[in-house]
Length: 128
Image (tube, rainbow, N blue to C red):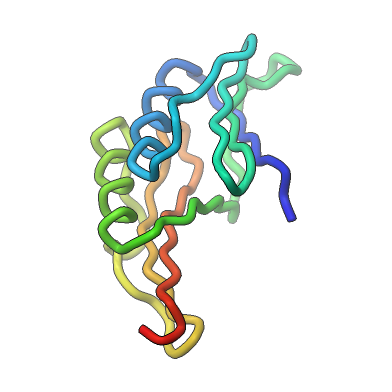
């Protein structure tokens, strides 16, 4: 459904370090620079950070969350830990399962250095 997601950030280098660590734990190659932006490409699309092109300060979307798919609980935990070590801040409940039945998901939330809310999401097989 999506081709890409881009979020505004205030410090490109700080954000690159954060997302290289977090996304690297999900098996995604380091970000590639293009002027005032960095891009990470995975099989599900492109994620990017940018300083705002209008010159105004970057701001966080209230109620916004973007999620990255993990292949296991362990991978979600590793990405969460890597993000925290790279300047992120934990938020919401600790990583774990939420929901019941077929909608049950393993979720790990944190905020990036600019305050954007990130979710690491593992969807177990239906038979698990």
